[in-house]
Amino acid sequence: MSTAIYSDLRSRLTMGALVALPFVYLLLLYAFPIYKVVALSLRDYQPAYATDDWIGLENYREILGDARSWQFIGRTFVYTVVCVGTSFCLGLGGALLTVAVGRAFSERWAGALRQVVILPMIFIPAAAGVMWSFAYTQHYGWVNHILLMFGLPAKPWLVTDAAFYLVMATDIWGWTPFLYLIFLAALQQLPAEVIEAARVDGASARQAFWYVILPMLRPVIAIAVTIKSLDTYRAFDYLWIMTKGGPGTSSTTLNIATYKTAFLDLQFGKASAYGVITMLFPFAVVILFLALRRGRVQ
Image (tube, rainbow, N blue to C red; front, side):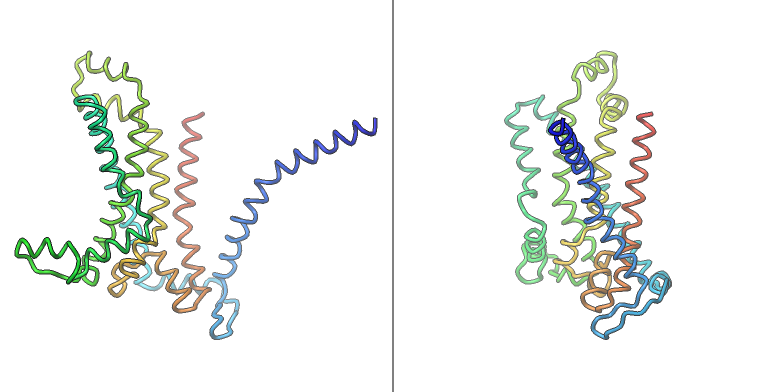
C-alpha cells in the first residue's frame, strides 16, 4: 500500500512540476523583467552620477512633453506601416505569381523564381545592413556608380534626408521573403476544386482572387501580418547599423531612442520609460488579435 501511495504522490508531483514549468518560465523571462523595467522607469537612475532617486512619473512627463519623442513615436509607426504594408503586397503578389508560373509553364520555372525571391533570407540582418551601407556610400557604392552611368550626381545617401527611407527599403528587401514563403505555402494548400468551381461559374481571375482566394487566406494573413508587425515595430538592426538614428535624429525610432538614452546618455530610468511606452503597442496588438480569434472561435 505504501508503495502505491508513494507512486501516486510521485506522479502528482511530476504532473504539478510539468504544469508549473510554463508559469515559472513566464515569471522569470517575462513578468520579472517587465516589473523591473516599470520599476526603473519611475526612478532617476544614472549610475555615472551615482543617482537612484524615486521620481514617480517624471520620466514619462519629460518624454511625452518633448516634441522629439512624438517624432520618434510617429516615425516608429511610419516605419512599421510602410514596411509591413509593402512587404505584404510584394509577398502576396510574389506568391501568386509563383503559383501562376508553376501552372502556366512548369514547376522548374516556379522553383527558380522562388529561389530568387528568398535569396535575401540567406543574409543575417547585421550582414545585410553592412552590405547595403556600403552600397550607398558616395565613392565606392554600386548605387552611385549606376547613377553616374546615367549622368546623375553621386551622394552620400545615408547622411541625407533619404536615409530613413533607404533603411525602410532595406527592411522590405530583407523581410518580404518571410511573408512570401508563408503565403506561398498557404496558396499551395488551398483546395483547387473551389477555385476551379468559381472559374467554371464565370468568375474572372480578379473576382476569384477577391471573393474566393482572399477569404480563404484571411486566417493566414492575420497571423503573418501580426507577427511581421510586431517584429518590424521593434526593428533595430538595420536602423542602427546603417544610420545609428541619423543624420541627427531623422531616422531615430523608439528603439533607437531607448538604446541611445540608456547606453550613450546613461539615463537608465528615462530609457526604461521609453521601453514601457514601446511595449504598449505590442501588448495592444496581441490583445486585439486574441480577442478577434476568440470571437471567431465562438
